[in-house]
Image (cartoon, rainbow, N blue to C red; front, side, top):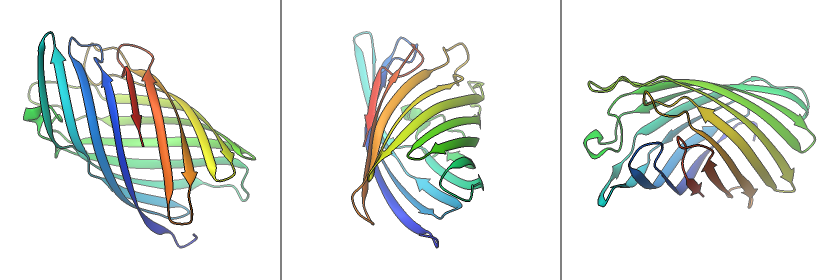
Length: 216
């Protein structure tokens, strides 16, 4: 709608991997997001809840609790007159350190991110290129790397469903760790004017990425 509208997104998922460390991690999460979207801008706040299990050798430990809140705002920087052509949009995000660092659910520091995406649409097919930068807050014990990230994507619209796939990579936040790369694929299906469902699965391409993950 031209005047915009608010929305509620209820997302749950799972991710597992050792991420290049001796510890195998399994993460279950639920992340409600409240947002507002208009033709040229959108804003959102995500409040996740996490259940994390770490296994090192024969030892296993589980923790749960609130994750880091993500506040995000995006804006269309260029929109063509019709449905075809180049679209450019940018976004800013802040990760608030609401997760308990003593449980290993977060770093306890604030992160800041800036992102830029370029899209080219041909009828019902869209190609996307994304890049971004995250200023990672350092803790008293670890000087984290700032993160540079990129992504390549393609999506295809079929009636009220959009299918998409992407390749993503980023610099590892932990010094000395392998830079993660992963692929993902999923769908977005509009049920009616008020409801939609989205799901995706992803897999790491190296030891720095997840073994497997999914969300809906």
